[in-house]
Image 1: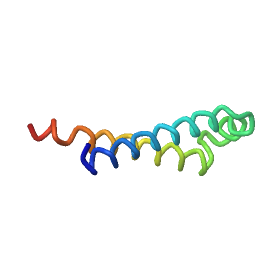
Image 2 (image 1 turned 60 degrees about the vertical axis):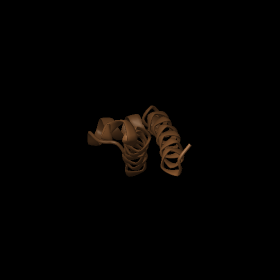
Image 3 (image 1 turned 30 degrees about the vertical axis):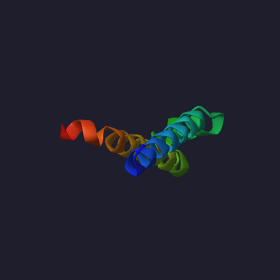
Length: 70
């Protein structure tokens, strides 16, 4: 396994974990009240969400880079 594929796998896993944290945070009662009153999630939840999406995308690109060159 090449180094870029290993880094891609790690980024994909970390991104997935961050997305789970964001999902759990968005379902917390205080977060639900905050979202209902302001119409948006808190900064921490948004940070988890953005970092998780970035990790998943970067990880997928690194894992599939050889196949995409093709």
